Length: 437
Image 1 (tube, one colour):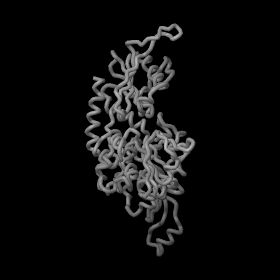
Image 2: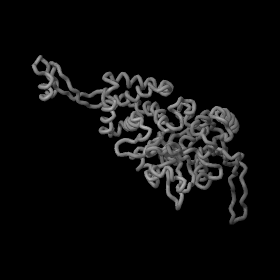
Image 3: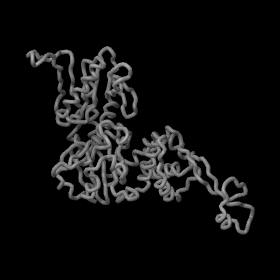
Image 4: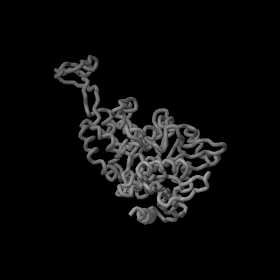
């Protein structure tokens, strides 16, 4: 197997991609909207929901003799070639930060602790498996999927259309039964059977019970809805679902789950894409992961409006004009604080970042704001005091009551293994929260 590791948001010479040219031929200079249709699984559904990343952005974009990587982390594959995109804030051979973010935000089992199947060679496939409970829970909020299906019967209680050819084949000589089919509205259908097969597939894994534990109620719903489940039907069920993609807008969560289940059940290390799709992969929006991780740390101190879920919307002006979604709004109404999560180095925070947060501060009468960013270079916090006065009048000076603070969470760099990383970043988290107390 040929494998190349790169970092997100980096420039790399095109010659460095020689060993994975089949991947670059498939993904370079293509938008997420195009690649999503070709088999790339992007989380969290960036095409529809994400703010920091859009369907028009790219995984790899040509720039002269270089490729520029985007703001995503994960795995891509074509045949026996693998491209691994790691966090730029990690050091060494293992991307412990990416694993830690997945564990904190998605409640993923620690990849490095899993048995043989979860080692680096098959890490991308395991990420797909770990996503299953999240998508199952999301879809199950709509209840079990129900649709019309045609069932075949051969008995004396004729209720549908008589199937003459099947009747002659099965009931000669005639013994009182009639072969017929009937259209029924049922929970036990091709999609719920696909989900059931996926549940049983994951159960058989050494770590299956750990993965499904967080969705035990939803798993029970699937099992109760599929009394006709038979392990031998798996191949036919997969083919039925490939031909019958969920299209109804109300069930779009089931469409995402359907696509994930097909990828999991095919379980082909050399070719996990299906149909004519050559490229496969799973990618995570780094900015989203970082924001949700920060929220898990500061949720006692801040409200967290969520643009993707359309929750916590605020307005700039009366009459519900100018919808805004600050990342974090302080809960202390006497000393309101605004905070913004930035998945970028301290020196890259500027310009439009400043203007956006200052607008939020003005709207919520906040005198202090934070940028929460990953600090991997050992720099200390930077405090920026807002100016007053005009250069035309030669009276510019720093105010002493309004400031922005670039407050980094230190990412451990010199670690021996994942447990060492967990211990060190745990201490970083304690230090990170001190400024908020």
